[in-house]
Length: 466
Image (cartoon, rainbow, N blue to C red; front, side, top):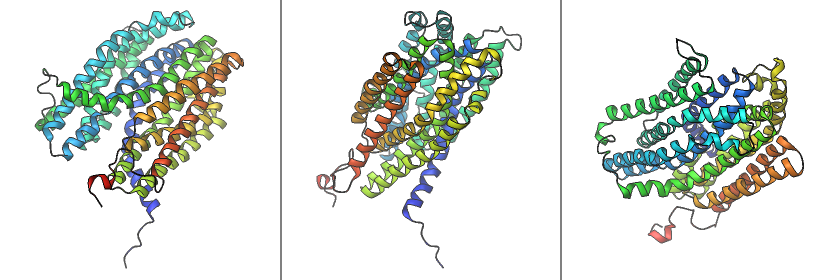
């Protein structure tokens, strides 16, 4: 007897999870670098944790912006292969490396000058000095990190993703060893403290980018990715940038909300900033699961859109959003009812000197329980819209949500309503909830029956398809 076919929603869920699994693993490995830095900095004490909170958010925000632009490499490489143009795929990857260089050099120089600026923004002088020392060294990992994204985009585009996961996982292990050696002075090396954390991270990003590019050159020589690097191609550079800048700004607006919030949090003292860093880092780790789901959701939506299956597009998008809500609801329960377990992963909650930091972290984690769910919704809704090649309007919606609503409400509640750090966190929730509402509404309107052509997908009547 023939086995009954699975209902369509169940098949969609199965296909989504099968695709999302390796993407989630890669995202968790990516965030693992910053998590290792934060956890190990906690062993240096609350002052170091506050320093890496301030320096780390500046570094990660600029890195997210650059990575977002280079996320365009993967779809362009994939499209070139679909058109049977392997030469175009290799050229796109090469120009991705050029774009990494053009973005990386000026930003690296700028990051090294941020330290003194932080002291003029109301930060604790000792915290600003620690953050500046960290940024002065980790900045040298910025260009290799962008080169790593370009190489990753090429491998994703040709369907060879396993080396990406292997490289990132090995990179986490290398970062632990390098941090231990340079932070605490192991193996005859000097104890550099937080500066050593930056040196270790920069070295590991350089090693990962070198390893992945060597793999590309040796395993896929026919694409000639590393040949002809002396000759930039302005046309291909413009193509990558045109597709990537809305993605980069969309991610950048959200990152800027968190960066500015961290800077403002620093005005309430190093204990508040250290507690903020614990809560944000924990939320960042759990956030990688819906990020992987968002990438997979975008692929599923794009596949259905290519077949002009409006019902399939809607089903794929809502399945991704639903899975993200389910997962983030579970993590929200942990944040709300077991914050001590989360805090203990970063520092010793029984140490008397950590008491104030622990109280702040527990308070912020309680608010993060709401933060979790809306953050999962907004990122998967954004991924679904990317599957429809709808990036510019979502970019504007993100700016309004994060730059106007989220930041504005956070500042008002923190300073005018005298809620201090809690007010800033409530602002984060309001901004993310606004983005979740606007982006989900746009997706639902675009995919409702009778809504006309899907964004980014030609109308059948316009291209002769009936």
